[in-house]
Amino acid sequence: MRPIFLLLFFLLIFPHAVRGDDAVRMKKPKIRLAAPTISAFDLTGQEFRLEKHRGKVILLNFWATWCVPCRKEMPLLNELQKKFGRDRFLVIGIAVDRNLRSVKKTLEKHQIQFGIIMDSEEAISKKYEVDMLPVTYLIGKDGKFTGKFTGERDWINPNIMDLIEKELEK
Image (cartoon, rainbow, N blue to C red; front, side, top):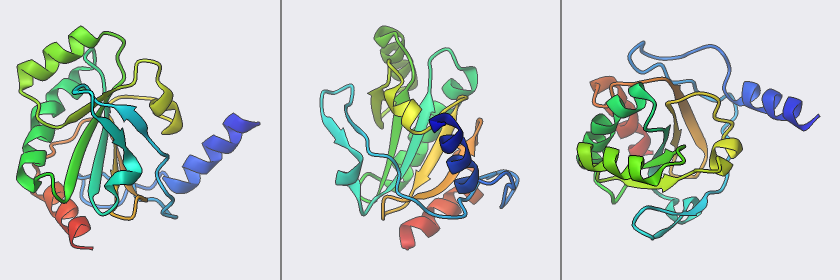
């Protein structure tokens, strides 16, 4: 019964109708609910707690080293983090990978500067019901879902940057 409830819950939150510019293709929730808590250590050993970052807009990107579209997004997500800085905006990568060495190698290759959390046991992925990669959630300053991006995106597209800028202005 629980899997059915969770499926219905996410169908309600993220309806099938895609709203907005085709380049953006962000699904907006009908009801903005709080994002599930995350409490984990990033690759630098720093503790990351989602609720400690209220007041910032968060882009939570689920990815893996074996996922080609995920790897293609990494430099663009890096550029996005650089553009908006860390004071008001955070890109957090959730590596759904079992091989830490592969993750570190990918991060070094792309010179990634944003935070990365390992999700080897997929505990975070299960909370967010990630069923494909890449998938990215935009979380507002209030800690609630603003939107969901399924599949690869051009994160430095002006329409996406405008969307994030508007969220930062709220």
